[in-house]
Image (cartoon, rainbow, N blue to C red):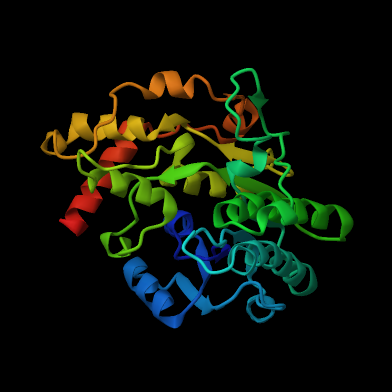
Length: 336
């Protein structure tokens, strides 16, 4: 009998790829979703009896995961991927900070109280939890030991700050929980950067995409006069992020580690240059910026040293051209 993995927020961008990969590797998956409609739609896409779902409308509710863990003693691994990542919200504190922090606390408390058979837990954080600050400085070296200095107070009054604060605060809570409580499980955290790539199925390309995917969509929907936000940082392909979540619980080397996922540095110009190269129909019709300007811009960023993560993962990351091409092809199929 195959092992059973629980995935919170199972129909999300990274989570759906992770669920799909788990199923391909023979696991049985139970996932949480926020509504019956979302669960039914996702199960229809997966088209397998090895995936089932439970509806948990708000992961911040105390005891939100108690019942599913009481009822499913066959679960041996828990991947906590669910976390709010949208900026069109009413209250940064209520809609981002509290769900992220309390949701993580609820997961770990429920596992401790009702699922002693769970031996591996993976919590999805973000590379923003491993930044000292946002000031570009190539002399600063970022590795797995670096932590954000964000606090609840510094994060609660703006959606972007709330997201950037929610990740380190929730991740710190997880590590402190393992340190201070008597638990049977071993913890690993996964810290993706900007996450690009296609959805596992065209049916999941929603009218309102996740924040990272919107970066590519905005470029191909622009015009020469558009004023686009220049995104800059690290990125990872969603398919690699999913693979990393499996390594996180399958590998003994990953126990107690923070796995920070970064394929390379990029700016919006990096993506635009790939679009123009591989989709000539956009030439002259979208905002093209200054071709090649990303090289000088990314050279001013902090130096990354994620060699420990990359050694544990043991696979080569997908490159930016493949990621952008696959994403744009899907958007063109769906959006027309």
